[in-house]
Image (cartoon, protein in one colour):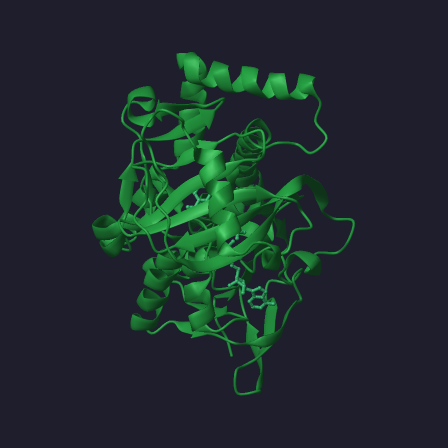
Length: 396
Ligand code: RFL
Ligand code: PHB
């Protein structure tokens, strides 16, 4: 087989790249390890920056997002028994984020790609990328029927997430990895109950962080900081709700956390990871394949979309013999990646309880939180990062 761009992974990065390339008249083959049903059910991110929304709209992909997404003009920061509102619209001159689940974006993208007749293959195994230094790199995989396939490409996009095969295909010694593991994890639940809040609540509590998010008018998404070695089996629903009630409680305010049946439960480790450069020969990495941020800043999905917004035009130019934008791809993306890596680290360390932290560290955290909610300059910094910085170029 022959195609222009081979894409490994049908997450948000791979699917959106395939669509952005198609808009430019460029053909691609997308191969995905998991089934379509699995990709469409995996619970992940929920917050989409305004420029990511604009990108999806410009690409003709925002029909359902515009109908069902919840536009949020701020967040709440809770600590020391108080809840404070950070007003993004006021602080940033009208910018917002939209709460629309990554699973819904993935469903929309898969439906669009299939309707367009794209080559999108699920349940492939033994994916390999080869001859990456040549201008005809090769993608090999075994399809769902067990047939071994080989696709000759002009370039390959590694959009296969953190555990994929593309990043390890770059020879050892040619990449620099920077990483940090955090001494806590998130236990996330999806609950069949209307959200108890109009906007997300990030709660710093002496017993650990908690986050109240949502998936629509009737579905809540909630997270609890837990130890890194926690097992989901140790957290029956009752225990989760007791802990959530405790970490969100606001005595005397009349506010209540509504409870409902738990539909999904999972534990997520917290990690910062950046592998540079994001290119080797004709292999270009995008999204979680190249970088991971802890979820506290709501950046991972947005970084994946920002990478492919840069990659699609760069590949277009490369196919026309212009190496310039492809040569600049990694450095261009890494600037945003490092900004988001810093912001996510900052939000994470400000809001979580660090096991073993002394009173000094705890007071420093509280001093930082008080500063963010009392200083317009500090709140503006949070708001401009949360809504997306630097701004993504408008258009495609
Ligand atoms: P994905 O989504 O991991 O997709 C990679 C795809 O590649 C497939 N794959 C392979 N396919 C073929 N051959 C192989 N050998 C393969 N190996 C792997 C995988 O099956 C998969 O389908 O990466 P992508 O596209 O880069 O997208 C990144 C985002 O998924 C991720 O950054 C976000 O979900 C992170 N994240 C959040 N990001 C936000 O912007 N806002 C949020 O609010 C937010 N919340 C979160 C999050 C991630 C979380 N978890 C579970 C990690 C909350 C959580 C709990
Ligand atoms: C989510 O809704 O899943 C979510 C929202 C905000 C975050 C992380 C996750 O910071």
